[in-house]
Image (cartoon, rainbow, N blue to C red; front, side, top):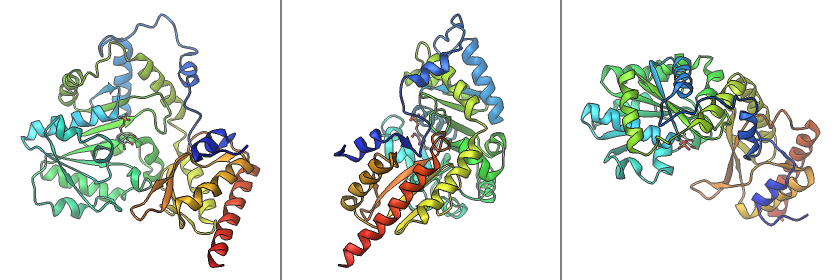
Length: 368
Ligand SMILES: Cc1ncc(COP(=O)(O)O)c(C=O)c1O
């Protein structure tokens, strides 16, 4: 069968190398399958079940207190607002490709009158020199680990410690965008609490590597999280009941929290397969988490039909969506989860053999 779009071809392929499973209702059903039906629902952020989960996550992150939020977008805007109010400074610093800058429609400016200070060039990580050379006063520095939009790169642990020490010495609050915090632990060989001890506040997502439905935790000192609850109400984040989110978050957290090393090794293995193909390279060349980007030396118009042919012949989908670099070259994100281990090795081999052959063939046809 011929699929007209990359997305359709991807959806139709039986196997995928990224993610866990299709985002379908069965994810919620599975989480609730063995749940007691008479478990009391939370009410406006209060109740034993939500409190127990928040306390458990606070302990895991090594923080005094934690609050469950329906989204990371909400949680992080609130964290930056609290730190800015505390310091009386409305400037906050982060990477030019952070979620706040790219995907939140200027919310911190429009809702909170905060001014972002963008640190570092788009294609590299924030380093100590960026913050040392800063001429403006900021209330807070937000660091994203890993830096998703550049393939999930990570600074060295030493850089993290230096940034943390510098911020403490100069009274700058340090916030962790740890949407994918668990995914960085195998590379650093640290616990979540060890990493979080370098930060004043921390956000963790439950639907990325953990694979839940949605939701986030925001953790820090008791006084910080108490303030965050007031802002959560102001933002409309106090849904009358959040249990479909946090109970499923807890279920998938327990299921996958110890699988991150496996995902990391699989990402390195898969990146090697990509890098062995002609005119294909991954960023980073060797992944430092379960994710990486795949770049091609060709146009989208050349790449799409080539990928579609592979999806159909090998029954393996790589991606349903191509992003573009500033130069207009196509790339996509790979994020390893449970799907990779379920992938038959002969399917993988066939798909990568085809990719290599087709990339070489395009080069030959260009030369003629
Ligand atoms: C790095 C990062 N930060 C924050 C967010 C926001 O999370 P949410 O979708 O829960 O609002 C995302 C979501 O993709 C993200 O990737």
